[in-house]
Structures are given as C-alpha cells and as structure tokens.
Image 1 (cartoon, one colour):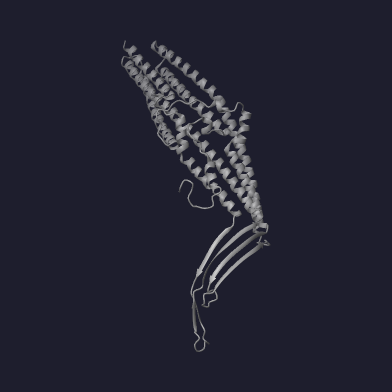
Image 2: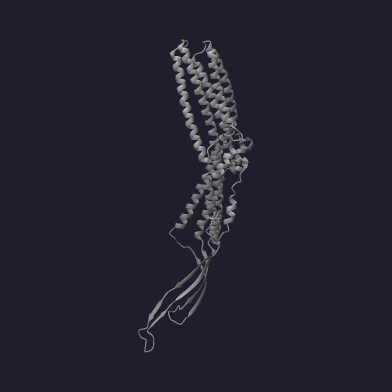
Length: 469
C-alpha cells in the first residue's frame, strides 16, 4: 500500500512536469498572454536600432536638397562704414587743412554657375542613390530586429519549458531517492543504489540551476530588443504560407528583394557617380556674377557724394595643371567602384548561401519535430516498462534512473524542435527579403520614409526639421 502511494506521487510529479511543458509552449491564458505580434510591434516602434537608422535616413534625405542647391544662385549682401580723415599741409589762408568724412555703403552680389562639367547633375543623382541605399539599410535593420525579437520570444518560451521540465525532474528524483533509501533500510537494495540516486538528483539540481540562468539571459535579451518584460507568451506558428514554394524561387526572390543586396547595388550607383563627379574637375567651369553697390562719400571728400555701381561679369575657368591630383582622384574613384561591385557580388553569394541553408533547416524542421514527438512517446513507454520490471527485480535502480533521463532528454529535444521550427521559418522569410510588418499583417502603420523626404526635398529655407526640432 505504501509503495503504491509513492508510485502514485511519483507519477503525479511526471504528469505535472508534462503539464508544465504544455503550458509553457501553449500559453497560460489566451486572454492575458503576450502574442508574438504584440512583441514585434513593440520592437518595431521602440527599438533604438530601428529608430537610429530612421534618423540616419532622414539625414540622408537632406543630401538631395543640398545637392540641388548647386543649380541655384548664391546671394550675398555686404555693408561697410568707417571714418576717413585727410590733412592738406599746403592749404592757403582760408582753406581748411583737415577734412573728415564718413565713407559707407552697401551692396548685393549674385553668382550663378552655368556649367561645371555636369558635377551638379551627377551630385544630385548621387545624393538620391545614397538616400535610396539608406532606405534599404533601414529595411535591413527592420528585418534583423523583427527576426531577433521573434528569436528571443521563442528563446524565452523554450527556456521556460526547459526550466519547468528540469524542476519536475528534480521533484521526481527526490521521490526516487526517498524510495531507494526506504528500500535500502529494509535490505532490498544496496548502498550503491542509494549513491546512484543521489548522483542523479545532484545532476538534476545542477541542470535546473543552469536552465534558470539561461532563462534569465533570454529574458534580458528579449527586453533589450522588445523593450518590455515577457509575460505569459502565447504560442507561435511557422510562417509557411508566406514562404516561396521552391528553393529556386526563394533564391531568385532574394537576389531582387533582399535589402542586404539592394543596399549594395545602390552603393554601386553612388560609386559610379563619384567617378563622374571626379571627372568633372577636368572640364571648364563657367560662372556669371552680378553685383550692385551704393557708396556714400567714397572719394574721401565731404559734400555728400553718392556712387551707384553695377556690374555683370562672366567668368570661365579652365583647369590646366594641378600636379596630377585630379587624375589620381579619378583613378581612385574607379578603383572604389570596382571594389563596390565586387562587394555587391560577394553579398549576392552570401545571401544565396543563407537562403539555401535556411531552406534546408526549414524543410527539415517538421521532420525533426515529428521524430522528437515519436521519441517522447517511445521513451515514456520504455520508462513505464522499466518501472514495472524493477518492481519484480528484473531492473536495477540505475535502469530506472536512466529511463527517466531518457524521457527528460526526449522532452527537451521536443521543446527545441518546436522552437526551431518557428525560428527557421522566420529566418528563411528574412533571408528572402520579405520579413516586414506588412507581410506579417501586424496591426501597426508601417514607417513611410517618403513622408519626410517629400517635406525636405525642395526646402530652401529654415533650420527646423519637419518634426519641429
């Protein structure tokens, strides 16, 4: 009767462990659970990496009106005032020998470039390419942040389930040790069996502490990316419906849509236009300057004289020789273009390799999950059999302990498989280039970089940014 009660207690402990595993992976309460969508929205709105990249994009937007300024004239105003004194040492009787005047004046000068070897034209195009490349860098940052947030979300779920399983394992092994000691006291087992149960319990307690530390680290990483503590995380399903149907299609899409590639392609455009800008230094520059100046008492004599001077001057500057600096700059720009092209090709290969690897992991994830589920069922059946055989002396305490650990490892493998299935699908979607709040259907307005650009692209006056700073 006593043994049956203990066996019932031990069985309840294992059932409790299984229930804890199910609760951790399925969510405590749907009404109060944090969904993955809510976590991703928090990361999208509040993550400092995303917001910093948005600020970098707004700064890049200002490069376009700055380059467009080359088409517009520059206007400067001048003013002067002073005191002039002259002494006539040969002055005769009745003629003043000293004269003091107040020369002063003001004017305005306007200068317009008429031709500079298309430097301004190419500078505007370069600024636009830089801005578009920075937009792709923002999209790349958003993808990485969303993927990191999802991964940390799943890490917390995995480590929570792992901790619960290890806690239940400690409870089971404590009960196992008590039973073994009782049997030792009545002479059914030896001191060796007790030592084996004690060793198993010590290891289980160590694993529990390790799982507790891992969970704390995952919670800290979650908070760093999402900006909030995780609370009762709800289950997540893979995004299989958003993925391409074949590997060939996935690779083809990634070569066009992955922001890591498109950002480098815009970088190639920037480098090409930099060559053209450097070559503009070999062409003549034509400028037109007009000025209007009004002076009072300019001659140094009193009498209230006024002079109004206007001028319109055309100027052409032809480069002849600068010690080879311009030619060196052009060659340097061409080498930088080659470097950027090679880097873009390298990035294409990296993305392709990442897509192939992610495709393989995602394809195998379901098979791994099914194998883990089968492993758990088989291990539980084996454990039940070993326990029954141990009652009639056909199995030792060590056999029971080993069977219990096999079940634990199988359940931990199932937790990891469920974690990996979700993370692998999101990773593939990110490598293809389609992980975004829009594709995921998150209930948040997507950041539109065109709003800021449209406000500043033609702005010629004012130091305040569109948000009032």
